[in-house]
Amino acid sequence: MPTPAPIPPPRLALPAVLFACLLLLAGCAEEVAEHRRYVPRDAFSIGMAGDYRSQGVDERFRGARGVFIVTFGDMVVALSSACPVDGHDLYFDPMPQQFRCPHCAARFDSNGLPRAPDSQKRGMPRLRIEPVDKAAVGDAVELRINPRFRFLFEHNDWSQPFSMHVLE
Image (cartoon, rainbow, N blue to C red):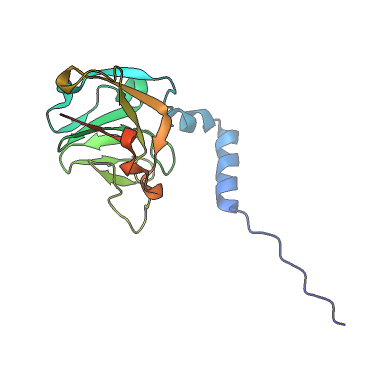
């Protein structure tokens, strides 16, 4: 019986490993890690629902909380400002109305959907948005974001009830 051919070892991403080693040797690893977006996990209030009647992207919570609040139609959603591709901090470019990652060049429309579906199939994660007081109605509803719960476009989670708040 012939001897089976040896199984080749798995290929490692050698260029990526070498690049990481070079960064460590050069002392640049901390600088690269600084640009990653950390989204705090504690729930926080974003104010009253009536504050979000105007359409568009609100960046008030981007810096401290890592969240964009987006109003379109009669819905308000909270989008994580961390790039779903590499975790870097996204910014909103108002002229073409899109979110951009300055590091991996990922682009998302103003609703958080991927702009180039061929190269990027993941949308920006939505975060749980809910009323603080379930009995309040209309513009008097105080809204809270809970970043512990994420709703992913690629898993068809965006239709879940707490992935959006419908304005009344």
